[in-house]
Image (cartoon, rainbow, N blue to C red; front, side, top):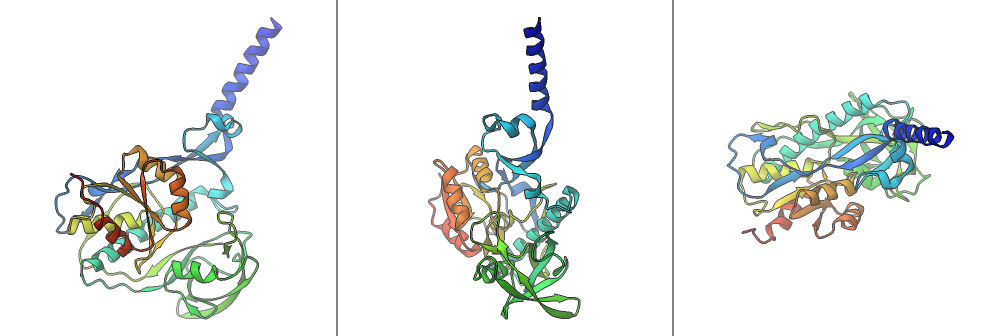
Length: 329
């Protein structure tokens, strides 16, 4: 009877561990999805076979048992602490709002880049890196504020977030950088220290989240709606789909999965969740997967299997790379 009671208590504890949430989260693959029905443009053409696909990452609470036993986590899952998703002092609600704002800006930038490629007259000039969040307990805390725009680093102009990352990357973690910041009609210079990125060894950061600042006027209506999906990482996919729907012959009849943040100058910036995204592209039987060149490509190829990975640094390069692919019969 004692042994039986122990087994019952053990089963109850195991069941509780399986059901009770932990303090950590799981990043999970989600299937790549076609953009054709998500993008509406004046003058769009009917789609054919293939298509441009975007990929996303599912985030959910891990159970206590999943946290303790890695073998019980779903395929492709990564366990991350809550502070890796939401810095201390912030909240998931605020992070959600930031992600949706990033998605809105990503859609606008993508439409501008694509329409320029198609020789439309687009009024849009990159004017700096807009600060959208400042991490607490980082060098930028107390020195930079959301809504400020960084326009220079160490005297060199910043027109895009990619400029900002490139110029700060010239330093070593622990160095100080001089940032020229604009707010309203006034500018100021502030010295900010750097620390090593928790996501990339040796890369200096100041502890801010930025997005493209620009006044964009589109000559035609472009509507993109992914529902509740947030973040900037579908920008490159958006732009490719806009060109596909207006001009055609971009996807070559292939299922083209795409990820990458798109800058207003056409540059492609790195994104997170590459492992989950490449698995999602594989599960959707994508023919190729376009990924930001560099560390993102290295990570994607680690999990790609037979899926062809195409690294890209710019929107123009992405178009050229796809144009060289044989058309799918």
